[in-house]
Image (tube, rainbow, N blue to C red):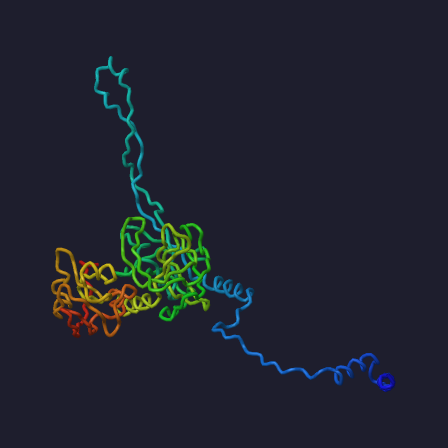
Length: 415
């Protein structure tokens, strides 16, 4: 008991002394001094905690406002270089008239056979708008890139409408023999242009912006999305019923509508990485664009030679997948199987024939690049040049060997 009393008295005296010292301090408030004292002397020693950065491959997410500002900036800077293309053509003017097949009957019988059958007849011709598309300016003196299917009709007239309201007659400089690409020219200078980016390093999930003349009516419509697929192969058809196979395409969920064809697909640096070309029917927000690397090659061809020359091997083939492998009992599940039903797969007088390729050969690689359903033979050939020597890895009778081939130029009768 006495021990407890002594402890209480000592503690009380110490506490009074502390209060007196802190209260007499001229430069601090009493209660602040008390708090500092207790914090410094009476608190327990804090533990050292090691903070580790979370393991993540992601960089910090930019604020929404920054992304929005970027998109708005790109749309403002790019729109002057995106053009609308109006397709016009002279079409028949039809009028309706009526005939009575019984008009040669005697007059007394005609009242009983008063029939009028409608007929149509041509009454001259007039120029009408028959379609529209989009393009983008790649040189200040009026070179414009668009889709081939937008300007496919040689009898049509094409008018380019700029973002500022000016319009110009356009002439088609070149239509790509294989790809859905074309180049137009308008006679004007000092135009705003778009920069061409690099489509060889695209990644899934990258943000992209599409700009185009939606539905042929709403000029410079902007949509935003991501790259949702790469190296896609599709079979596309246009309004005329023309069907073509397109390989190595960029897939995006940025809305691409009718009339957007030929417009640019941009990255967040404002560079063109693709040319919008097709949409998937029966689906929402699945569109496709041609990689800009193929546009660069086309522009170089036109500027250097005044025309587009396409490298040519001269074979018909089936890309081998699981189904083809089983159907023909093939020893590999990839490659280009040289096969054409009821006819030879080797085109006469072609580079393939001169190199000694035969029906039912399987081309496994070209210059070490493997041929697959996602990287077809035609897609690889388009990366080459006319006159370029390439090495084919060929499988024949379960033996592989290298066949050197010099690529030719695609003949006009095969375009």
